[in-house]
Image (cartoon, rainbow, N blue to C red; front, side, top):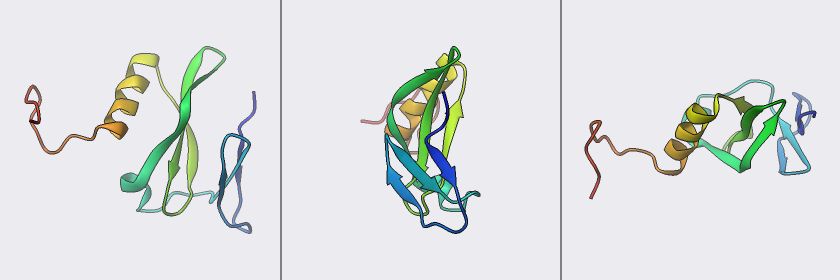
Length: 91
């Protein structure tokens, strides 16, 4: 299975997920704070992955991880902690 992401410095970024994504070849500072998951968890050769996409600059990657680690990461994107300490729950 190939990636749907095309990296280019000449083309503007386009998010046409799940068909095609044109992404800058390198991340920007905004990617750390403005990345989101595109679609559901997919699998390639037994390895789960998600497409992670920066909504500001368009930088996109396929993030592979062991299943447990990937699920925890995806949960953190959807429900970011608000400074609570481990074991504390936000009201």
